[in-house]
Length: 363
Image (tube, rainbow, N blue to C red; front, side):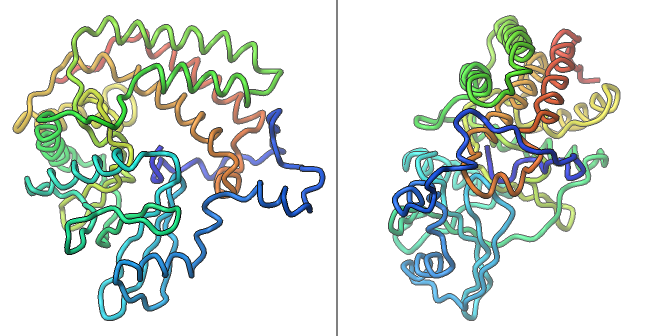
C-alpha cells in the first residue's frame, strides 16, 4: 500500500500484542553483533546525514532542515534547500518496486501533467532523469504542495473530482502499464489471506477466519466473473481523500505509488462514504462530472463491494508483511492483537453480506 494509507482509528484500544509464530519480539542472544545486524531494517540507513548526502549528490545545497512526513511504505521528507523553497524527497522501500515499475509511475505522472491535470509529478534534472540512486536507495524529488483533504460532503467538490478523474482516466486508457501489476483477487485476496492465515491469525480464531475467508473470496471471484467484460486501465490506485490536496477550490492528486491496471471505478468508490442513499448522491455527482471527459461504464458498479473487500484483506496483509519494519508497531500498536483480528473477522462478515446486496446505481 501507499504510504498515505487511510489513517487508523486513533481511539482503538491497545492490548498486549499476539505474537506470530515467527515473531522476533524477543530474540535470545540479541546482544550478539551478528544477530543485531540481522535485525536491522534497511530504512535504518536513512540517517539525516545520509539523506542530506543523497540530496547533495544531485546538486542541491541543503540548509540542514529535515522534516519527516507521515509515510510508512516509503520514507518521505521535507528537505530545506538554501535560498529556495523546500522540496520533498521520497526514498523508495527496497525490493518493493523494480526500477522499471517506478519509472512507469513517473511517466504516467508526466503524461497527466502534459494534459494540464493537477498531479504532483517528480522533478527532473537537466538530463530529464526523475529517479536517482544513492548507495542502495532509489529516490525521487517532488515540489512541495500545500493543502488539506477535500470536503467530500460537498457535492460541488465531488463534481469537480469527477471531472478530474474523467480526464485522468482518458489519459490512463491510452496505453497500458507494461511493468506495473494489475489489481486482482489473486494477489489482493488469495495470496493476502494465505499470509494472514499461515502467519498472523491467532490460533483460537484461525478456524473461524479460514472458513469465512474462503466464502468471502469465492463471493468476490463470482462477482468479478459475473460482472462481465470490464476495461482495465491505468489508474491512481489509492485515490482516497488523504492523497488529494485541496486548496483555493482546486485539487492536486499526490502519491501515485500504487498506480496499477484496474477498472476505472477503483478510483471512484474510495470517495464514497455513509449509508447507501448518501453514497448514491455522491456517486451521481462524481459520475456526472466524469462523463464530461470519459464514459463511465455503469457495469463497473457491480465491482464496488468486491474491490472494497479486496482492499480490506490486502490492508491487513500489508500491515502483516511490514510488521518487521520498526515504524509499523509504533504507528499501528493496535494491529496483531486478539481484538484487531476479532474485529477484522466481524468486518469481513459484514462485507460478505454486502457482496450479496444490489450494486449502487447512478440516479
